[in-house]
Length: 64
Image 1 (cartoon, rainbow, N blue to C red):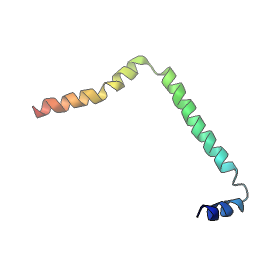
Image 2 (cartoon, rainbow, N blue to C red):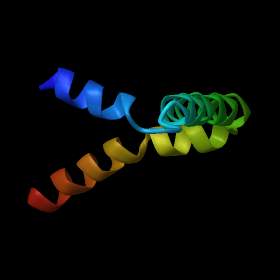
Image 3 (cartoon, rainbow, N blue to C red):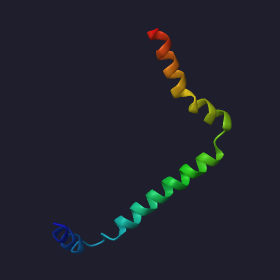
């Protein structure tokens, strides 16, 4: 199966740009994510990290 796909792809002109483009998008996404993590405000991170606990406490209070 893979040999059929490989032979089919080899016959296409300009197909080499797709792996390069995919790698650039993948790399770019993680660079942007890394930059966002480094520049995120500590207050925002603390607030967001408490959301699962607040929801869990709220559900426990309503069931009691």
